[in-house]
Amino acid sequence: MKILLTEQIRAADAYTIAHEPIASIDLMERAATACVQWLTTHFAANIGFQIYCGMGNNGGDGLAIARLLLQRGYRVKCHLIAYRDAFSPDCETNFTRLQSMGADVQTIREPNDFQTPSPDEVAIDAVLGTGTHRPADGLVAAYIAWINQLPNIRIAIDLPSGLPADGPAAGFLTVEAHITLTFENYKLNLLLPHTGKYAGRVHVLPIGLNRSFWEAADTPYHTIDEALIQQIYRPRQPFTHKGSYGHAVLICGSKGKMGAAVLATGACLRSGAGLTTIGVPPEGYAILQTTHPEALCTILDPVCHLEDVLGPASRYRGLGIGPGLGTSSLALHHLHQALDWYRNPMVLDADALNLIAQHPELLTRIPPHSLLTPHPKEFERLFSSAKSDDLERLNLLRTKARELQLILILKDHHTCIALPDGTCYFNTTGNPGMATGGSGDVLTGLLTGLLAQGYEPWQAALLGVYLHGLAGDLAAAAHSEEALLAGDIITHIGKAFQKIYQSLPPQKRYYL
Ligand SMILES: NC(=O)C1=CN([C@@H]2O[C@H](COP(=O)(O)OP(=O)(O)OC[C@H]3O[C@@H](n4cnc5c(N)ncnc54)[C@H](O)[C@@H]3O)[C@@H](O)[C@H]2O)[C@@H](O)CC1
Ligand SMILES: Nc1ncnc2c1ncn2[C@@H]1O[C@H](COP(=O)(O)OP(=O)(O)O)[C@@H](O)[C@H]1O
Ligand SMILES: [K+]
Image (tube, rainbow, N blue to C red; front, side):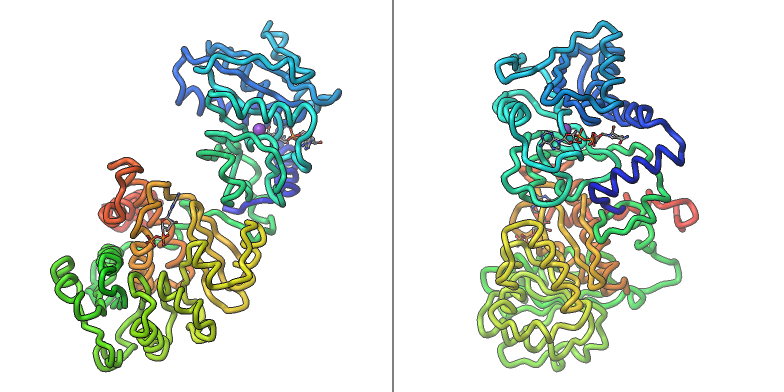
């Protein structure tokens, strides 16, 4: 789904209002209703709400939420942060509607007016949304500083107040929300690490903005959604055999790091690849044969040529190299060999990327449309000009993907896939439980196995990253985020495939 930038969101609202048609006040009511549905599903009727509203349309949402919660019997106290004189028209209408119910709205004109709520009440932040275009100051800044020090749970409407939807945010004082209920789709700054952290857990609430406007909008940024995955994923066909699903080869592991090879192999086997061969150092042979009897195993010694031990490269449809490989001269030898031997898109991860960072001349030898899966540190090593500023880093990611004709997968909470055509896809599956050693090795195995099955490299990237996060979410549901192991992600790949399959429209479900 497209990620629209601030001006486009405003235009999408206006287009929906004109073409649905729907009055803007009713669109606001729809947004507020979506929030109230979410809130009443998650909070029992004895919970009290403190709702902080601004004077623009984000404040209008807050005032409408207050009214709808009161109508459902919740305890609500509403506060108007009167940082300017004029209301937006829809905010004023909702202010009048709330007052005409006899609701108590406290007007806050200066910092001394803030009243400390009971700590068990839920604070709703509806002061600023997508209208934010400059750093908060005055009363708004005082509100943000005040609410951030409360022990209460903070739920932001659309965006944490103070955070621009996109564009630079350095120096912007921002509400630190625990939860953000955002409308229609993620805003770019919710997906980037230095700004997204202010939003806590994000829930996207559809409010039915006009689809044809959305589809025509021009933006390089997308989220990977279920509809896109349904288009990419191909269920298996009856008259097929292991040859139909390709032969994957992995070059991973070194002494003390065989676990990475074991995890990558396990994920590759679970990806659906017809055959998986793993090339390992002599000390890894027994380990792989024992842990994964389904895989073929070949010893790669210091003098071997890949052609001699693995046969012609044409035998394989996907190659993955890097997890646990180390950065020794032997590992470099294997990387050189792989780049000489295999001329189709491959997956390069971990130590393969670290070796390339040490020998940048190798970058131009990588087959076009290969998948590189750096985490932020590896990305920095690869492209020393990488900046810590999120937007600069995103631009560099897109530039390098275009320049080198590679698929760059920057791993993070919202992994970002930059394609050679300049488009960017952010993943929305996955959870912090996956911040544990070996998760990335699992991704490498999965991506290699999808390449082996004949998915186009961009399809393998989007499907693999999405599946990896989904398997991680299912694993976290079974084990908790804390106790999640990388191996649990592998165990849940099957359930993730089933979930995708079950979401398919009936005409694409070939078996029941
Ligand atoms: N019909 C619509 O347009 C809809 C709008 N919705 C809500 O409307 C919000 C956007 O509303 P607005 O465009 O009125 O903007 P906001 O309510 O976010 O902000 C109000 C105004 O504050 C000013 N401002 C910007 N930065 C400021 C700062 N740092 N300190 C003080 N004032 C500042 C700007 O002039 C801005 O227009 C969305 O985030 C969403 O919550 C939703 O109700 C959905 C429908
Ligand atoms: N907080 C998080 N939320 C979602 N996904 C995460 C989070 N932390 C890590 N991950 C995912 O886990 C994987 C970690 O990869 P990596 O850092 O290479 O791990 P390792 O080198 O230990 O295998 C990536 O796919 C990343 O997107
Ligand atoms: K807000």
